[in-house]
Amino acid sequence: MDQLYLRARITRKLQEVQGLLYRLTHSYQGCGHADCGVSHNIAEDLSFGSGHLDEYGFWENPCSTNAREWERRFPQDKPCWPYTEEELSKMNLGPSNIT
Image (cartoon, rainbow, N blue to C red; front, side, top):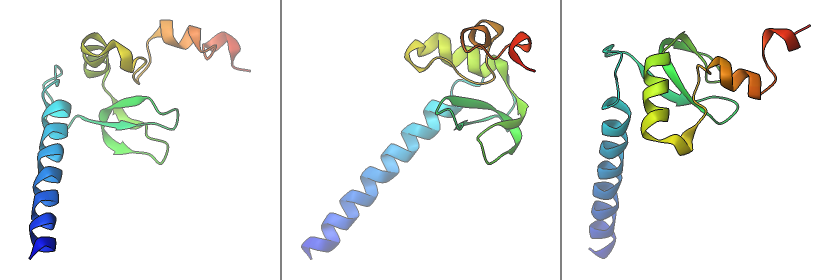
């Protein structure tokens, strides 16, 4: 009986956390596209976009609108992909460094 009760409480808490994560990721869709999503990329940065999500965490259709909005609301999560030109220059990944 105690294990069943504990399992039910854990399941309920997990559902609450999943609901919170869903609301967080879907309440900042400034772009207005219902299919826009968020993930983590290989650099462990948040990645925003839609379409196919590749094995490295980059979207087929990047969404700068949602990435910038997330950075505005949660500056501790910077940088978010797709990266800004400023972030690319900080990372030394700009066109001048590609050979």
